[in-house]
Image (cartoon, rainbow, N blue to C red):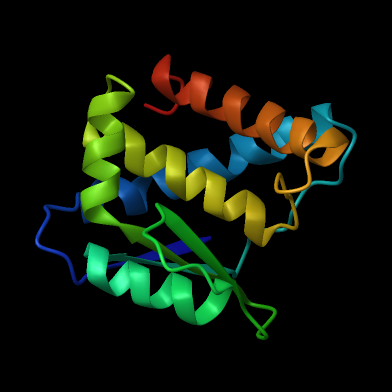
Length: 153
C-alpha cells in the first residue's frame, strides 16, 4: 500500500512519517478486522491519497458531497479503480483543534483520522449506530491504541 500525501493547508504535515506508517497501519488494521470476524484486506499494489485542506475548502466539499454546510474533520471518497482504495480529505485546522481537545499531538490526530477514513473506505460505517458502529470503533480504537503504545515503531 502506498500513501500519497498532499497539503493545500497552511499547516505542517509530516509526509515522510505518514507514508512510512502505512505498512504497519495496514497490518494492524488487518489483524483487528480478523479479530472482529472479517476478512483481511489485500493491500499489495493499492494506493491511497490523503489531502489536507483549510476550513473553507472542507466546508465547500462537505456541502457539495454530503449536503452539510459545516466543517468536518475527514471526508472519504471511494475509488472506481480497484488498485486505488480512495481519497481522504482532512481539515488541518480541525485536526489541530481536535488534537488539543483530545490531549495528544497533531500527528497522532492525523493518524486517528486517516485510520477512521480508511475504515470508511473499507465499508465500515457508524452513522446508523448499532453493530456496524461497534465493529468500526472496536477496530479503530484497538489499532489506535497499538499505535499510541509504540507498536508501529
